[in-house]
Length: 321
View 1 (tube, rainbow, N blue to C red):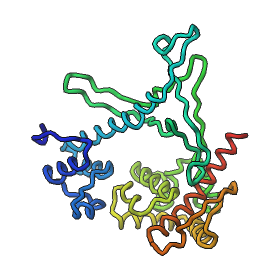
View 2: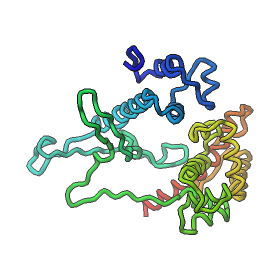
View 3: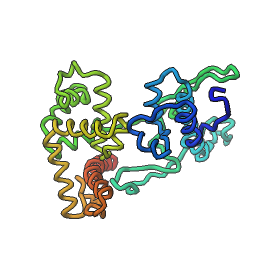
């Protein structure tokens, strides 16, 4: 009714036509190039950016909510239901009597390029913990919160325990690079991301805003995981040029870290591979490619593989000990 005709919210083409042709939204700067080529972007980041600038338009929120629900259904709920096995109670009764299911995931130790542990059938490492709010239905149904992870519960007398290292990748980076500014932020006892925001923004920690902390966190992980400038701009909802400036400014505040990351790229070009803390090698066949895009990707992988791979080494050692 809002558009005056039916629309399939699951169709990027129809959503793009609705957003840019019918509703006449101007494309955000980071998506302007694709829009000029006739491919108006409808990625989540783009729609969120548009929604922030025009909060009075409900259509963008409907599309985002539909996609979240569709992803929950297709990526998590249906695969979990397909993999679930009914557990009989003590008298041999099945699910109807016991009310219990079990999910048995397959764990893979070496399936990723970095050596990170992964799981499949189903992937239980990415079960969303953040609940989403479903809007009230047209038929009078009340709005409700849905959290997929709440489907996992412990048996009576047992607990489900999750344990993780705090800022493991950054601690490894501080140790491997001997960066005093990064190490200081980790050992001072304060909020780590507030402290590194204060470092690169050159202000007192007390003056760091919540938005600056959030952006710094996204920026730090983007650099840690080897995101390119384009992906960084999309993540932070800023232009390519602004993303590059922010990255360069951030790295300028952590010079020993920057030098260490540069040394990893040099080593990768010389040897054709990088080695993690635990001695695991990753070959980088495109590190000397004449294609700039392939070479840049391999250079990011050189840094990312050592950081994530070394973190994986530490986690696996802890699991085995």
